[in-house]
Image (cartoon, rainbow, N blue to C red; front, side, top):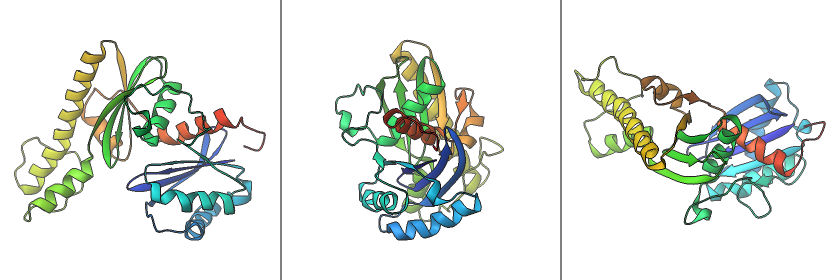
Amino acid sequence: MLLTIDVGNTNTVFAVLRGMEIIGEWRSATEGVRTADEYMVWLSQLMQLNGISPAEIDGTIISTVVPQSLFDIRTLCRKYFNGEPLVVGEDGVDIGLKVNITRPEQAGADRLVNAIAAHSAYPGNLIIIDFGTATTFDIVSSSGDFEGGIIVPGVNLSLQALHDAAAKLPHIAVRRPDAVIGKDTETAMLSGIYWGYIGLVEGLVSRIKEEFGAPMTVIATGGLGHLLRHGTPVIEHFDADLTIKGLAEIFYRNRPPRAKI
C-alpha cells in the first residue's frame, strides 16, 4: 500500500491507497516542530482504526509547501514506513509535465500535483481552483503542461485579516448566507466573504478564458470548495481528493505499482 503525505500551510493530509483506491485519509494541523515519533503515535492509532497496519505500507511520497516540516516527515517515512520517500520537486522525481512559467522552481508542489491529477481525470484545457490557505487558479493545457496561474488570499485568511484589522468585527464561520444584503454585522460579513469570493471566481475565470482563447473546464478542490461550488455554475467539477490522486500518479510514474501496493 501507498502512503501519501501532503503538507500544506494550514493542514497536513495523510492518505493510504491500494492502487488508486483511497482506504484511509486523515488530516492534522501543520506544525513545523512536531517530531517523526509524535507523528507516528498519532497516525498509527488512526490507521489501526481503519484496519491498516504500518507494516503494510511499502511506498511513501511527500509534497510540501512548508520546507521546515520536511526533515521530520521524511524521518517518519524512513523510520516507520519501510524506506526512502519520494519528494515532489526533488531531483530525479519525474512529475510528468512541463512547467511553462518564468521561474519553474517557484511553482508550488501542491499546484503541480493538482495539475497532474486533473489532467489525468479531465480532457482538454483546465482551470483548477484550490480553496486552501491561499486560493489558487492554475492553468493546464490540453497537453498537460502547467501554464501558470493566479494566487489570492484564501477565504479564512481574508476573514482573519478582517477581524484583526477591525476590532469590532467578530470571528465567523463561513457559510452561504440566505440573502446578499446583510441585516446585521455577521450576515453582512458572511455575504461579503461568500458572494465576494463567488464574484472573484466568476470574474477571474472569465478573464482567464478570454486570455487563453480556448474552451476550458473548471475543477475545484480544497477545504471550502465544497461550499463555494454551489454558489456558481462556473465550477463544473469538485474533487476533494485531487492532491492525493496526483501524488499517487507521480509515485506510480516513478515506481511502477507492485502487487502489494
